[in-house]
Amino acid sequence: MKKVELKGIIPPILTPMNTDESVNLDVLREQIERMIQGGVHGLFPFGTNGEGYILSEKEKIEVLEAVIDQVKGRVPIYAGTGCISTRDTIRMSKKAQELGADVLSIITPSFALASQRELYDHYAEVAKHVDIPIVLYNIPARTGNKLLPETVAQLARDVDVIMGAKDSSGDWDNLQAYITLTRDLEKNFRVLSGNDSLILKCLQAGGAGGIAGCANVYPHVLASIYDLFQAGKLEEAQAAQDSIASFRAVFRYGNPNTVVKKAVALMGYPVGNCRRPFHYLCDEGMEALKQVLKENAEKGMC
Image (cartoon, rainbow, N blue to C red; front, side):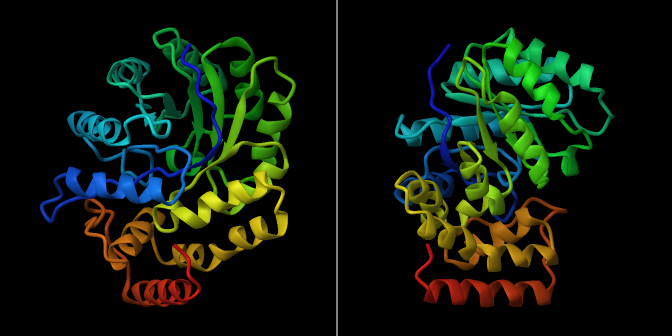
């Protein structure tokens, strides 16, 4: 199996789009450079913030090819390959490995309710067809399926290539259980927070970092949470963690993906809108967003 250390802040990098909603690969390359210059520790194309849920298979391949070509091995690349069916997930995972991804992030199947046995069998079967690390991806609010801590622990014990889990439930007890139940495994299983507000708490409990959507807006700030924690500068790490709260408060006005993408556009980067219908932010939300971005810019956040 390919050896990759799962750690740090990994942005689910947004997918820039033109006015006709086609993918803008040139601006994607610019955003990749911006993320790397900001100090991030990996990149995750077509995650939730990358609108992986609405990209075609052809578009996903084009995005992944561009990311791999632009990164040139400077940071690990986590490819989101989860589909509703096991068969499609296997196909996408094999393709991502073939193209040169370092890690597979595999979201739980969605729409139909799956039992824990079905989720276990799904991941175990996909794992038979690849030999790069897999990160399990739990985001029940979006998929309708919750990957329980006991299932994560069993997969971690039984399947060699399953090396980590990302929990985006926002439920601290669930995230903590992921860490606790996998802590004593012989292999170095790593847990990542998918909720940006829990990154430092995750690190303090023994987690490895976070896959952080807000890093698309403030890559340096988010990366510094991990770096400062590793340096033992806990007060500064806490300050960095706290500094994103005002931005996250804007999420109450609309879909976080939309807020993040509009924020990056307002900062002067031509990333376009989210693909319709998920592109609207009310006037009150836009004003709140502009105010927060202004205040944070005056603080030097980037």
